[in-house]
Image (cartoon, rainbow, N blue to C red; front, side):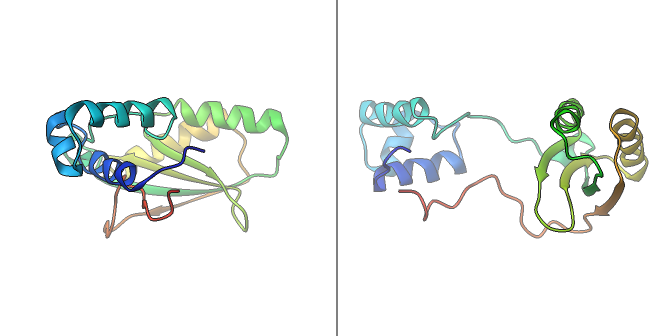
Length: 156
């Protein structure tokens, strides 16, 4: 794990907020010259701390206004089943995240779809590909907080 200092944390905060600006502007915001800023950002990328610089798209602007959390239980816990489940979940573009969990659920899936009918189509595709014991869905009525920015207070 890379050792981070205050400047690294400030750079990460700025990059998480907006990575589209120039190195000069980024350096000005964190108190570095353009070259020093470039070297720091490159070091963060080389170390795998910064994994990508991407554009965030408003889901509603592309007709994906419904977020669905899908709770999955399975009776199968062998490596072959997990490999199939993971492969099939990764192949469905509406699925934004898949998490293996402890407790009552085995997996939690986060998906974006236009509406309930599109969720049903996603559900049908998934159960055709993978045997699941129980599936339930929760539809998001209001997004209170949605962010891609990670808290940096824990970074060392």
